[in-house]
Length: 152
Image 1 (cartoon, rainbow, N blue to C red):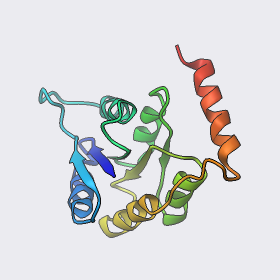
Image 2: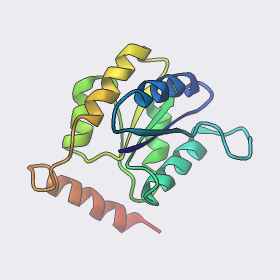
Image 3: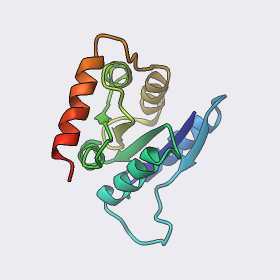
């Protein structure tokens, strides 16, 4: 599985910790994308867009975004048409982000969760898969319909 991890100026330290943690997990290919290729300072909206577009382009399977609370990254990532991002601060919400919502991206708050909890949250999310025939399939399909309706 190909994972992309990124954080804004507040979340970059957590992003780097998570990238290092994931690099030790068998079967994962991890890329850290916090810094802009041109070195420009960025807002979390720019980072979330870059990660979301890379996932939609098929370069990565899933993404993890970090900022101070996880809120700004979640809002920003969900503005990218076709992306489903979920803010997670515990293992149950991370598991459900995958199993019930087929989330491409989870977001974490560096000021909200510690590094060890963040690793556990990420592990729970990556260990969970969406069942396209399961009870949440129609909900995810409806999200896609809503996304397409308002896409420009």
